Image (cartoon, rainbow, N blue to C red; front, top):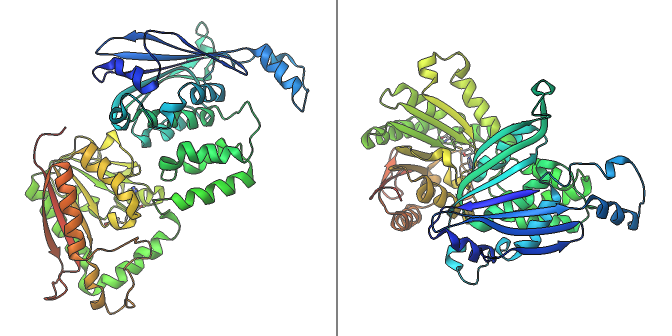
Length: 473
Ligand code: SAH
């Protein structure tokens, strides 16, 4: 079985330092089930490829099993199977062993490079994929990869026989080497949906160690955890509970609708929602944006307004919640929309705490009442994904002004406006956040208020317009 990892970051041969494997040598490691080798078929300044080749010895496997607790099942399948060829848990285990240091994020010679997002391409020529390309995309796209997959037919000579369960896959993206290795380590056995070893408690630790920082917010967290732990209910519950502690994005699906209604009721007397939309649409117009990504679009509140604005040619609504996207599709009548109108808008599921190539090349991004739904420690990931990676010319953010809350008659003292809000900022807290984000990512920022302003407490909603200073990096 084979996996190649290529970078075009210059000098590309530095990949050897990142992986702790010199490009000029063949590295060989003996595993209980065969041999793992790393070689570099391509090592120039411009492009460097490391190949991990794992030779699984099916006879050794059978022998191993006989030594184990159950010497059962002397069928032909033990000898004739796909394990020597298909990227599976064997490959993941070999990857963990051979690239252990890189996997834990360390690099002796190039520490700053190990922390940087670099252009990587991963090729898996024979990837078993339960659920097919759809599942493959659902697993890798939210992590920021462009996915290219070719179905491998059961027999190249007889296409009528239909597809095999294998795909020839290329994943490309700009990520840290550690992230790429972690994603493969966890997701290869998930795609294969098999494991060659017995799964127990230690598997939860492995999953959290390799997946902790990205899995908690992955939209397919449940599927990944379920398959990784081989559907063991007890392990699964324990793992999900631990992931929840790291969780970032609240799962908005369940109670979201009633909570939204609550927030609307609190703010209703001043029809803040309508004023907010007017202010955002005005800011989009002032920016002269022709394409807008509405991040955390929810039920499509702003999307409907943007569709009416004929200057905006391309609209993307992104949300982590599938239920919210379904509501948006219904509200906008996407399925009965005239084709020309329909072409202008896309809805997509994704988490804002991930780099997402789909968000690149928009003139403006809007975050309307979204940032306060993230746990403060995860805001940095959103900043990196939006300002650092997607880098739209304009970013428009709205968020409540906490100081104003005492003026809402329906809101008990000290509460936030929405049960899912993780925080609400005062005016000076917002100003501080916005200034440091602008400074770090090369934006200029301007803050204004939305709704009737109180002399002492300010306006109920705050709006920040960020404008990128230079060309995108
Ligand atoms: N912008 C909409 C919805 C605001 S509610 C409006 O003004 O009506 C906040 C929305 O952010 C919810 O739909 C929630 O699902 C989404 N959200 C929260 N955290 C997210 C994340 N990390 N990535 C993507 N969407 C997220």
